[in-house]
Amino acid sequence: MTRSHLLEARDLRLGYDKVPVIDGLDLVIPPGEITVIIGANASGKSTLLRGLARLLPVRGGDVLLDGTSLPRMRPADVARIIGMLPQSPVAPDGITVSDLVGRGRHPHQGWFRRWNDADEDAVARALAATATAELSNRQVSELSGGQRQRVWIAMALAQETDILLLDEPTTFLDVNFQLEVLDLLAALNAERGTTIVIVLHELNLAARYAHHLVAMRGGRIVAQGAPVDVVTVETIRDVFDLDSRVIVDPHAGSPMVVPIGTRSVT
Image 1 (cartoon, rainbow, N blue to C red):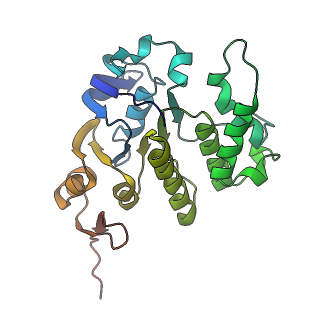
Image 2: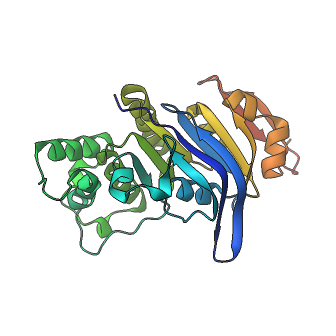
Image 3: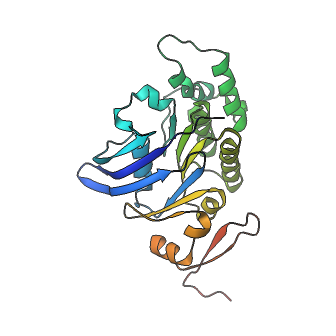
C-alpha cells in the first residue's frame, strides 16, 4: 500500500504570461481516492493540474503537500510522491519504449543508487499493465497515437508514486482502450491506495470512475463531491451550456448524461 498524502490548494492563483486563469481557488484532493476534474475547454482543468504538480509557477495562494508548501520542496522529494502525465508529452528522438518507461524510475535513483532489480520489476509491471511489453524494443516515434499514449501511462506507472496526476490520459484511445486504462487506474487505486487525479472530457466515464468529481468553469469550481451529487441537469447546464437528461448508468449505477440536441428525433 502507498502512503496517504494530503494535496490541497489554498486561494490558488495561476495563469500564463499576463493572462490569469485561476484566481482564488480552494481544493482538497481526497487521499486514497480517484478525483476526476471535468469542464469545457478553457475552463482551467489542465492549468489546475499543472499547478498541483508544480509544473506551473504559483502566482498567489499556495499548493500544500502534507501541510508543506509544494514550491518550497526539493524537486526530487516531490517527484517521489507526485507523478504527472501531461497532455501531449514529447519523447526524445530515437528513444525506445523500454528506455522511455525506464525514465519513470529516475526519481528513485539518487546520486549513487544504480539501476537494480526493483527498477527492472517496476518497468516490467508497468509494461504488462498497459499491454505494451511487446513494444519494448520499438522506437516511440514508430508507434500509433494510441500505442504512444499507453507507453506514456506505463512511464507514469513505473514511477510508483503515492499520488498520480493525469491530464486526458484517454486521448487518442479507442473506446475499448479508454476503458482498459481507466480500469487499470481504478485497480491501482483499489490495490495500492494510490491517490489519482484525472482530467477527463468524457462525462459518463468521469461519473463512472470518480469517487470525487470536480466540475470547473472559468477557472473556478462550480460543484464538487460524489458523482451523484455533481452530475445533475442544473450543473451540466451551468458547466457546459448543455441541456440534458441524467439517468442511471445501467452497468455501473452511476449517473449518466444524455445530451438533448436541437434536432428532433423521429
